[in-house]
Image (tube, rainbow over all chains, first blue to last red; front, side, top):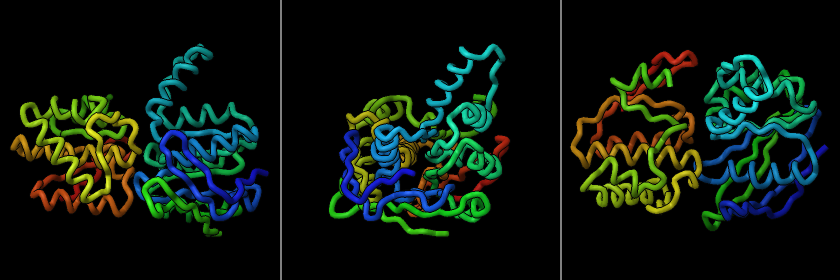
Length: 178
Length: 137
């Protein structure tokens, strides 16, 4: 079980400093976090430079679908074309589902605005993939998702990222929603 | 790309995956603004700073801004292209644009368009790439 401790974390890429008010740890074997905040506050930097750095250092398996999925999808399709003899004509969700089948069981799903690239039904299907344990979601339209994941996920919370004092300083507060 | 061939004749397409053709706003302004490129950049910077707290550096790589900020920059920039060039605003087809904005910034964008007297209808696509909405801005 992972735990990101209370403290200050920095994004080397953007220069944003994050102050985590409560430690981030799963409250069940299937926990989902909704990362929220204004445009430009640093949600993606938090994922890339805090969450993923932590998972890498502590060897927790994760599966990131980035905000610039268009670029990621080209790399994924190219890799699949090399290792597979079949003609790969995947749309976004089929591509992600296909790759998810090959990842380590217990991986942590990190979806950065992937909801805009698939239907609600398919997003739920993806989140319920057997290889995922926990999930971090960035979305600007997640009210429906919060209501739809209560059957599969045992616990959920919002990680609210907000600026304070200057544009480069943020606090991250967690609020449990179920 | 199928979407582009289907809709590009009738709509000005703003797609999250292909927001700009250049690396910096300066180069983008030269392509779309020609002789008015300087005023286009200055006006874009002014609105972005005053209404969205985005400090746009004209020589900074646009990919270094966050996804949501890139969307706001493009929406303001192209709105001003129509205004500065005195082009009748075309119909917009927005692909993964609204979904990238916070509720607050979505409202702010609508207000900015209204304040600048740019009357644009925008369209969205459903999961099968059919046009589904035409809200009036």
